[in-house]
Length: 120
Image (cartoon, rainbow, N blue to C red):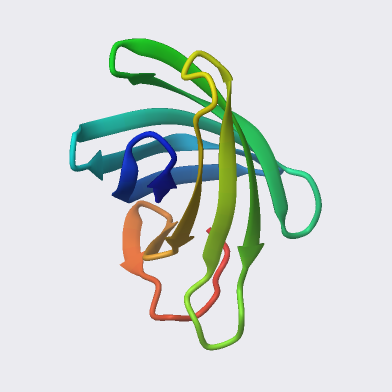
């Protein structure tokens, strides 16, 4: 993740999908500390997601608009490429992210993705 204000960070996403609704959180470690965001997304088309997130950044409550594209190329791990921009608090902040799917849940167990695109 690259943020205009906080610089580069390493993020972990935990998302869950029910139909077209996706929710969860993103935990990002920057050199200045950790930021945890609650995320709510909707599938806008087959591979496009839109939504928002909320986080406390340096003591400020911030809401961000998100857009992302899901790509599941054959033989590679699925990726989520996106961008965000502040819509309340954190004025002018924006950034980009790329997430690579590392595992999926099936039943009660998390299993390695194995590099194959699989539905979650």
